[in-house]
Length: 97
Image (cartoon, rainbow, N blue to C red; front, side, top):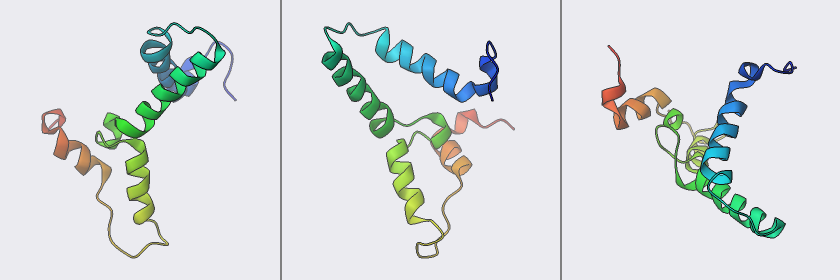
Protein backbone atom coordinates (compact mmCIF):
# COMPACT_ATOMS: atom_id res chain seq x y z
CA UNK A 1 0.00 0.00 0.00
CA UNK A 2 1.20 3.49 -0.80
CA UNK A 3 1.53 5.68 2.25
CA UNK A 4 -0.06 9.13 2.28
CA UNK A 5 2.35 11.94 1.37
CA UNK A 6 4.76 9.43 -0.27
CA UNK A 7 4.23 9.86 -4.03
CA UNK A 8 7.67 8.43 -4.81
CA UNK A 9 6.32 5.00 -3.82
CA UNK A 10 4.35 4.97 -7.07
CA UNK A 11 6.49 6.95 -9.50
CA UNK A 12 4.79 5.59 -12.63
CA UNK A 13 1.38 6.93 -11.62
CA UNK A 14 2.87 10.22 -10.46
CA UNK A 15 4.65 10.61 -13.79
CA UNK A 16 1.46 9.87 -15.73
CA UNK A 17 -0.54 12.29 -13.57
CA UNK A 18 1.99 15.04 -14.28
CA UNK A 19 1.92 14.36 -18.02
CA UNK A 20 -1.88 14.28 -18.06
CA UNK A 21 -2.09 17.52 -16.09
CA UNK A 22 0.52 19.32 -18.21
CA UNK A 23 -0.59 18.12 -21.65
CA UNK A 24 -4.35 17.91 -21.25
CA UNK A 25 -5.85 19.57 -18.21
CA UNK A 26 -3.66 22.68 -18.13
CA UNK A 27 -4.12 23.30 -21.85
CA UNK A 28 -7.89 22.87 -22.01
CA UNK A 29 -10.92 24.83 -20.91
CA UNK A 30 -14.02 22.69 -20.55
CA UNK A 31 -17.47 24.09 -21.25
CA UNK A 32 -19.30 21.23 -19.59
CA UNK A 33 -18.82 17.63 -18.50
CA UNK A 34 -19.40 16.19 -21.98
CA UNK A 35 -16.81 18.58 -23.43
CA UNK A 36 -14.33 17.44 -20.76
CA UNK A 37 -15.03 13.79 -21.59
CA UNK A 38 -14.52 14.37 -25.34
CA UNK A 39 -11.29 16.31 -24.81
CA UNK A 40 -9.86 13.77 -22.36
CA UNK A 41 -10.82 10.84 -24.61
CA UNK A 42 -9.13 12.49 -27.60
CA UNK A 43 -5.99 13.04 -25.50
CA UNK A 44 -6.11 9.43 -24.22
CA UNK A 45 -6.35 8.03 -27.75
CA UNK A 46 -3.44 10.17 -28.91
CA UNK A 47 -1.40 9.20 -25.83
CA UNK A 48 -2.05 5.46 -26.17
CA UNK A 49 -2.33 4.90 -29.92
CA UNK A 50 -0.48 7.58 -31.84
CA UNK A 51 2.70 8.37 -29.95
CA UNK A 52 5.15 6.14 -28.24
CA UNK A 53 7.13 6.67 -25.07
CA UNK A 54 10.89 6.27 -24.98
CA UNK A 55 10.57 3.13 -22.87
CA UNK A 56 8.90 1.41 -25.83
CA UNK A 57 11.37 2.67 -28.42
CA UNK A 58 8.92 5.39 -29.56
CA UNK A 59 6.45 2.69 -30.63
CA UNK A 60 2.85 3.52 -29.66
CA UNK A 61 1.61 1.28 -26.82
CA UNK A 62 -1.24 -0.19 -28.89
CA UNK A 63 1.18 -1.15 -31.68
CA UNK A 64 3.67 -2.57 -29.17
CA UNK A 65 0.92 -4.65 -27.52
CA UNK A 66 -0.18 -6.02 -30.90
CA UNK A 67 3.42 -6.99 -31.73
CA UNK A 68 3.84 -8.58 -28.31
CA UNK A 69 0.66 -10.60 -28.83
CA UNK A 70 2.10 -11.97 -32.09
CA UNK A 71 5.15 -13.15 -30.17
CA UNK A 72 3.29 -14.58 -27.19
CA UNK A 73 3.92 -18.17 -26.05
CA UNK A 74 0.73 -19.26 -27.80
CA UNK A 75 1.77 -17.69 -31.12
CA UNK A 76 4.09 -19.42 -33.61
CA UNK A 77 7.70 -19.45 -32.40
CA UNK A 78 9.72 -16.47 -33.50
CA UNK A 79 11.96 -14.45 -31.20
CA UNK A 80 10.74 -10.97 -30.37
CA UNK A 81 13.41 -8.28 -30.64
CA UNK A 82 14.65 -7.01 -27.32
CA UNK A 83 13.17 -3.70 -26.25
CA UNK A 84 16.60 -2.21 -25.61
CA UNK A 85 17.62 -3.03 -29.19
CA UNK A 86 14.60 -1.11 -30.48
CA UNK A 87 15.32 1.88 -28.25
CA UNK A 88 18.97 2.22 -29.19
CA UNK A 89 18.31 1.37 -32.82
CA UNK A 90 16.09 4.46 -32.98
CA UNK A 91 18.17 6.68 -30.67
CA UNK A 92 21.85 5.62 -30.78
CA UNK A 93 23.03 8.88 -29.21
CA UNK A 94 21.47 7.81 -25.88
CA UNK A 95 23.67 4.73 -25.59
CA UNK A 96 26.15 5.23 -22.78
CA UNK A 97 29.38 3.28 -23.09
